[in-house]
Length: 225
Length: 202
Figure (tube, rainbow over the protein chains, first blue to last red):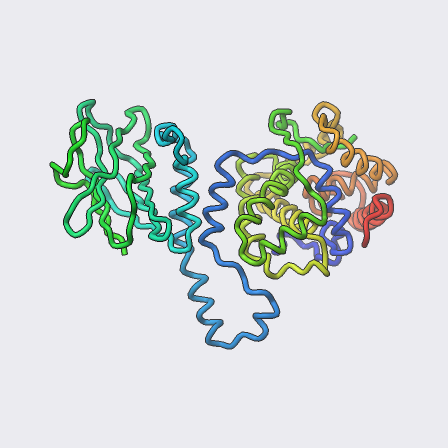
C-alpha cells in the first residue's frame, strides 16, 4: 500500500500492524451505509473476468515459463473488464430496464449477470451506422447474448429496430425494440433465442409489426468467434 | 463528542448489519480464495455496507466512496488466495485495506483541494444519537465510545482525527496545537489504551 506522506508504517499507530484489531473495531463502530443498486452487479461482472493471484506458496515453486504465462493471462482481461463494466453500468443506469423483464421469465439483469459470469464470455464492440456504438456480450456455454447500444437514434412510431441471429446466411428474428426519444440512445437488449459461437448478430430497421426476414441493410453486423 | 456519522447520512441508507462474525467472514474469504464467486457475493453482502460506512465517513463524498470500495473489493477478490487466517482475521484485513485506501485518497486529494482544518475540528462535536437507531450498531458503537471515553482528551482527539479524519501527524499537530512528537506519543498511547479497553488481541 502506497504512502502519500512522510509517516512510515512502523512509526504510525494508525497503520501499525499491532493495532489492526483496534482499527477494525473503530471501523465497525461507524454506521453501515447501503451501496447503490448497480454497484454489486458491476463488481460481480468485474470479478467474473478478473483472475485471482496465485497463493504465495505456489508462486515460490513456479518456474519461469508459468510466470510468463501468468503475465499474459493477467494483462488480457483489462479491456474486457472495462467493456463489461461499462455495459453493466449502462444497464443499471436504468435504460429501458423495465421493458426487458418479461412476465415470469428471468430478468435481463439476471441473464446479463449469468453471461458475464460465464468462463467463455466474449465482448465485441462495433460502430453502428449513424454514429452509435454497439457492444455484444455473449457466451456460447450459457447460450445467450446481450447487445448494448449507446447513442442509438429514435425511430418513427411505425418502425422498430430488429435483432437477428444470422447463421449460414439464414437470418432468424431475435427481437424488436424501440428507442426512447427522451433518452441518450442507451439500450440494453437480451436477444431472443439461443446464441451459438460463430453466429452473426445483425440489426436492421423494420416495420413495427416485424418482418420474417430482414428487409433493409443492417445498421450493424457483429461476427462472433 | 464523537463524529461517527457524517452529516449527509440519513436514516434511509443505514442498513442492518449482516452476519459479521470473525468465523463467517474467515470462512467466506477462504471460499473466495478458491475462486468461488457465490461466496464472494455473500461476502459482499456482509462487508460492503461496513466498508462503505467507514470509507464515506473519511471521504464524505458518496460516489467517490463507492469507487474506493469497489476497488478494494476487487483487490480482495484478486488477493484472497494469499490471505492467511493464521496471520489475522478476514474482517480486519478487509477493513484495513478499505481504511488505507480511503486515507490515501483523501490525502492525495489534498494538493488540489486544500482541506479545511477547521472542518475537522467542527466534526469532533458531532453527535451520533440522531442516527444510531439500530441496536446492533448501537451496541458496537457504544462499546467503542466507552473505550474512547477512557482516553485522555488529547489521546482521543488525536485518534479520532488520525483514524476517522485521515489527517497526517503534522495536520493533527496543527489542529490540536501540540508538537508532532506529542501527537505521535498520544496516538500510540491512545491506541494501546483502546486495545486494552476493547479487549482485542494484539
